[in-house]
Length: 79
Image: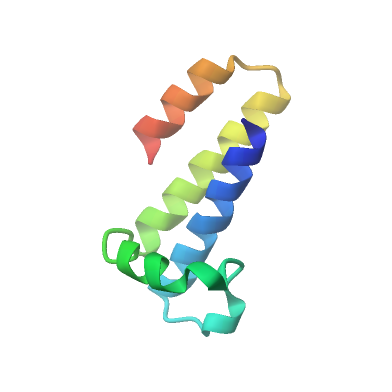
């Protein structure tokens, strides 16, 4: 579960970078550039930042032994 959230966090970080036209070399997932570019049309910088923050909060909740089911449901609503 945490591994999936960390992967999602990485993708959201890249979406945030694409929203501000950052250099492609700064992407953590440069191999997914084409797919991220297409997805970035739906995720402006603010939305990517909010989603990234939600995933970060979810990871922290899991570290505090929150229910994974509750955490996943909450993240889905936030993103």
